[in-house]
Image (cartoon, rainbow, N blue to C red; front, top):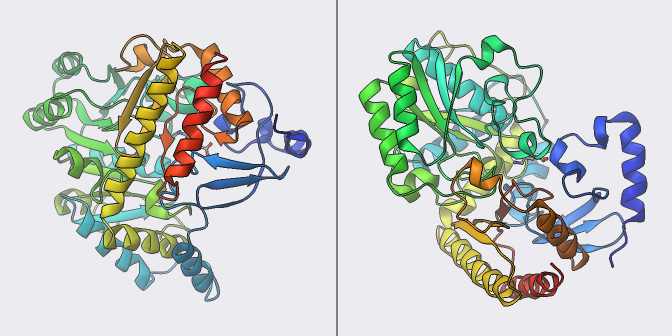
Length: 429
Ligand code: HOZ
């Protein structure tokens, strides 16, 4: 059994001065029990904690570390940049360089605006959609998570559902009434909502592959149906590609699924592990943003040189080696097969969802296709599974409502070690 004395001591100290001891709720382990692990450092596919344990990492900072931790070209770019000043609040050339690269990689966008997080990207994208269309309401899907901005904390996934507050106190009724809630993978339901709110809906925002109620891929025809519905009703379709962008393909889910959104939001991989978000669209939409247009959006640290240098180094690597996406998908498929065989061998009821390098194990007897089916997972089994994996040196997300993010730094030996751990743990479930 792995020991975590120092992590527990650090957690006790942290709780005195930080609410719940963490700066983002899911990290607190409340959903699985026990104390969170404090990280000392990480390299490649491995985390090294404050007690000296080595863990194979399947969270990878919730997505960004697609090429592994402390990836040298990214680290070097940041170190070199830092020597020349860390923030100016003035334009720098590197912002244009990363913007040009991102625009060349992602389908159907002409301009991109950089912010500091996925939350900021999604909240700004919705404001832009409202300003562009002159309409107020938005449709979001139960179990999808678009950051913690007020409009999105209505039946939200990720930490919001993990801690039983998918509708957070503090969100006013006035804000909540403009957020219409639909069922993921249920086009008829969306059509009904649109029909009942004719001429009032500015945008539909969706994770094209959901990752915040575990991984849930879109049903065949669902996103195509949304696209057609939006076109018919002058509604903007926003793809939240915070998780999927620059992960599933160079052009994200738009490229992988061959569907264009009107506005796309990014976070995670685009920042190479530094705090970066972004939103992008065609000229006619982006030109509504200040200072060109009337929709206001700003930030002192937006386009920060360190963040931009990490993002540029990361996107350049992916752009120069597109075979990485195939390799990631193959590794994930290998893991999927190995885990399936191990769980089947021990007759553990489960469903595994996977798209590209996103995968999650749901301890559910039925297909997991939306929030309702995701909520049916056997949480007790998940808790045992989580701690069993941890005892075997494997770190997965401490919540059944999160996705595993595969990194290219994982070797097949690491994957085999993980499958062996699943086999051992499954025998105890
Ligand atoms: N919202 C993230 C999971 N979908 C968690 C972020 C964190 O705790 O770092």
